[in-house]
Length: 86
Image (cartoon, one colour):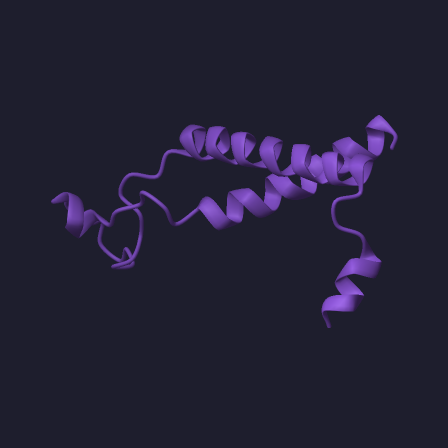
């Protein structure tokens, strides 16, 4: 597998991981006891930390990409095996 393919797969895993991890650790202004801005949605996050989200997404996507590449190299799970399960 070429390194550019691995990079593309890593990027796809990173974006998916960021979206999956987005709601974890987020609290609303009401939960934090902060004042809301007039017109603000009740569900708006009060403690969004993009740096922490990017770090978590990076770690998760590195692990997922590592598993994907290891599966590609060692052939633990192949399309034929998946067809046999169906």
